[in-house]
Amino acid sequence: MNFEDYVKQIVDDIDDQKTKGIAKKAIDIGFKNLTAPQKYALEQGISDFIMKECPVCGEEINYEDMQSAIFNGECSYCQHRWDEMLAE
Image 1 (cartoon, rainbow, N blue to C red):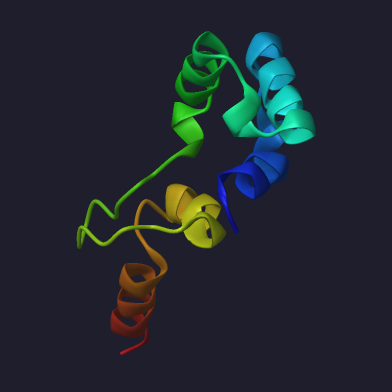
Image 2: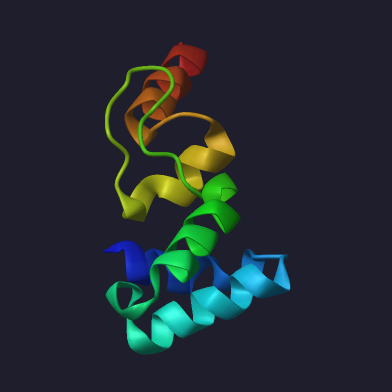
């Protein structure tokens, strides 16, 4: 999954209408075809949906795991370790 696929996944969860409009445009024409101000506005507008690295272990989080990581507050590996500790 790339950035544009991730934006498709989260677009319905974006509350700000301006950001949502830019996200839909990015989906239609591609992120690289947005103007610099549009790219900036989109990046700022979806910053709550982005977690580049796990705050626990520091590992990079890919787009496939990002929504789960944001919900859990950590990457899938750290969540797995936590689940194992609770099961003991």
